[in-house]
Length: 144
Image (cartoon, rainbow, N blue to C red; front, side, top):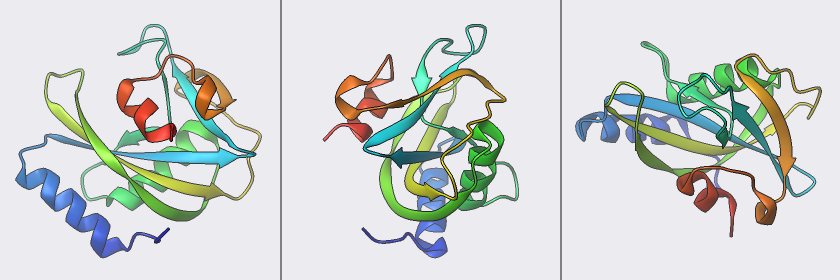
């Protein structure tokens, strides 16, 4: 695994913008004891009830890595210790009808709990072979 450099990640964002992608999202795969942290969208939210990895929008003036750290802390209360690798990206239709590109990174955290949710209604540590209702793209990222 190669730790992604800020220059590499900036290139990913530039490629997405050149392709006409309207939104960028940073996502964290947080592992512990062979399990991955998943959070569930609130029932009244876009794609309500769907499980996902912690992720969020890259704000104006923010890098993808800045957003990764901020969103992980905001959504889970956990602090990223290290970004260990880039796992890939996928595009999806967002709630406004545009296309969003999610960049996904494997990370380690300073501690794995407590998980404090602010935007989701539940969390779980799931084994790759026992994932709840996640998108096909997330399933592909998390299963060998």
